[in-house]
Length: 292
Image (tube, rainbow, N blue to C red):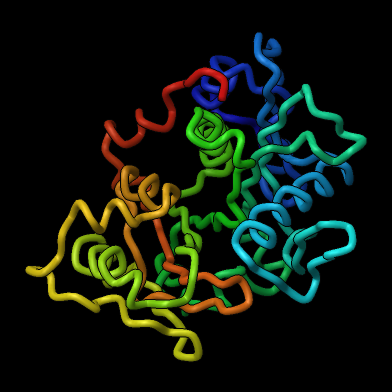
């Protein structure tokens, strides 16, 4: 598969190096361009060293910072892994000034799972928390996004924009029509999250034909406050940056949240229908930004 001409132009404008390239996702998609005049690179993981550095970053964020855990977490080595890692692509933000030998060069991660990868593995990650039947029945080409995290030193800059720019290239290369994945609130106390959860439910619920439903074993109602009692400013202030980013893309949520006690999070399923995105939404993430 070759990358569409527009995706090549976007990648060249960003100075992307070596990506997108994938094995079971965007199999032959590859971009090579002039290296950017900054020490950052956005590409798919291409080696064990890349994947180890991604797992090291995930450990710092999901385990040390947010208090999560899991059966494959390696506390001795400081690595956060799960059974999906070998079946997926890993989009990385790399700081070339950091030493790959110390597994410190990856400063941003996004895990990507195509339908082909999910079929080969047996399921999507989100299948464990949501009934994805409406998405599968839609006949649209799906891409699951997950394990998104950024090194604290790089938050607030343009690092996430650089990753979204590269994700746009991957989406074009694979012909993706719907992006989806769980996004998390820290903590499992729904009462503390009532404002943002209710705001999402009342104002950003996905259309019925595309609306996954949270599984009963971890389901948490989101309509905890009546719409007339909501305060938009308070709700948006309590919204994690990643969820706000999805909303700016025209994103919508599934029916119900899911309490993930192992990761100490309250998850909501976010989805973005690329066909429904406005040009303003597209431009927000495909316009090239500077370095973090």
